[in-house]
Image 1 (cartoon, one colour):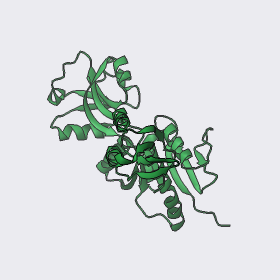
Image 2 (tube, helix red, strand yellow):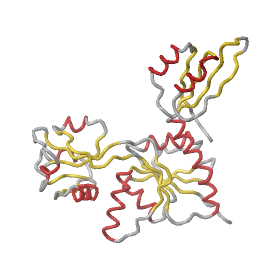
Image 3 (cartoon, helix red, strand yellow):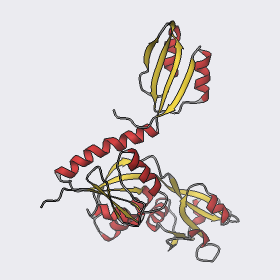
Length: 299
C-alpha cells in the first residue's frame, strides 16, 4: 500500500504568530483542527500536514528538511541562520513569501534613568537577550563591544535584578518596557513573518501541492492590503477622477442605467485610500463612494 506524499508545514504552536497563521490557513481554504494538544494536525481537504512547534524550532526543521515549509518571524530565522553559520551547520533555505503579519522590532532598551547619547555609550555594557547573534552582528556593524546573558523569557526584569545593564528584545507597542521601567533607545532589527521552504527540491507531488497553495497565500496577502472602490462620477470628469484613484490598477468605467451624464467607476486599490481623496472626488461631483475590504484575490 503506497502513501500519498503530504506537504509538511511547521508553524508556531502558541504565541504571537499562531493565531495569524491559523487565520491565513483558513482564508486559503485549508480545513484543519488545531484546537487540541496534538503536535501534528492534518488538513482534511488537501494533502498537507501542519507541525505545531516552538518558534525557535521552525527554522531548523526547514533547514534540515524535516518540514517542507515553515512560517516564522524573520528575527527567529536570522538568529538561527547566524547561529548555525558559527558552527558550520546546514543553514540554507528559500524565503518563499514575505507575509504581512507578525510585525515587530528587535530593540535595545535601557532603564529610564539611563542617559542615552548614542550607540557609543552602550560600548562595554551587558545585555539580557534571547537573540545574541542578532545583537552581536549589530554591535560589530556599529563598532561597539557588548556582552550578553542569554535568557529565554522575562528578559525585562534583568536590569532590575542586576543581571544586565539593559536588554535587547522584541518590541511591539512598548507597553511591557514602560511597565518595567525601561525605554527603547536603538532599533537593531525589524521583523515580520515569512514563509520559508527547504532548499532541496521537492518531489513532483509535493511541488504540485505547493503550486496550488502559493497562489492562494499570495491572493490572501494581496487582498489584505487592498480595497475595492466603487463610485458614481460625472462622465465629463472621468480623466480627473482616474488621476485620483490610488494604485496602479486601471479603473473600470461602466454606464449607469437611465443616466447619461454619470458613469460607475470600479477599481482595486493597493495603496491607502485617504479621506482627503474621497473629499476631492466629492468636489468633482462624484457620489455613492464605497471603499470595501477584499476577502480573496487571484490574478
